[in-house]
Image (cartoon, rainbow, N blue to C red):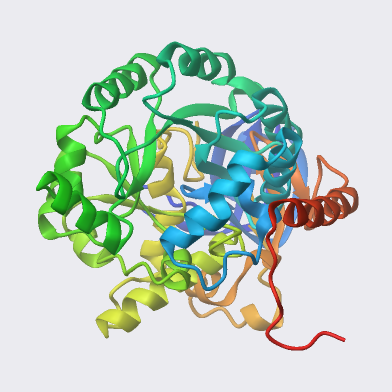
Length: 446
């Protein structure tokens, strides 16, 4: 038993308590108590004491849209819209990369995520050719939680996909969940397989896992669906067994009120990625309207290609500013709401709200310590405001997953970071040369 004391705890519990002079008691992978230090220490007088050094404790962030395999391509997707982005960068990367390069990219991304306080992420398009033994081994090594959306297409025998998913679901001491990364028609030339979507839905129900895919994300894919099927994307998804309470749809920037209602009625979850939406000029999620319709909205960074970072604190701030600026209402989205999106809403989206997303007895001991004793984070008139608007990933000091410390004083515990960075730099150069990814500097480099 350990008791982390000398902290302020932003619990994200049902009452959204912020407990000053707080302590968290945890044993093995489970939180036993989160309350005033006097209460917790009296309950567990013999526990090992851990000094939180006056930091702010938060439940680990849950990034529900993170292409963790794109980190080696950081900076190569700038000034690209959706279609050239897919055709010129993503497709060559997926079809011509080596398995170890994919694993390395994931490791680099996971290290960045952990440093920024992300304890769980959803990777929506994990390529079938990836080395799942090494990939899940990397998840295990770093100690993070991963929801791996294994990409599945109708051309692949379902039995082959199920064999891989069943083998690795629950690996890394239960920290890996294997979901279906669904392929749906979004552009001219895409085929339609109604029985395939139904089969995926049934397989997901049988396995007790989820489905994740990009949805109504671009002007082009929304128009394509209307022109091709005579339906809005949410109507098509509903009628093709691709919505439900175990489904995360990504994007939604082109949604209509009818589609918001359909998502709410089916209990589907929406992952919002404001930085990537802005950077790729794909549209603006009508977030207040989606919230008002009753849809659970989580937040995700997207990836190193079209965001250039996996910083959830930066994503939260951007999300608020985007809504407030475009709505011209300073309360269109609040700091409190976006912090919910990054924690408890994310836990609901991955079907784990009973054990993730808040600091409560009985939940997993996944939390971070934020160092707010910085010039840019004081004074503290409103703690949640300072967390969302004044902090960034560099403020994350320590991170725990399942009660194990995975970040210590800003350094990832499970790896040699210097060696990882050196290998990533070397491999990224090789990959760019092999795939013909060239990027000329706008300014002269001497």
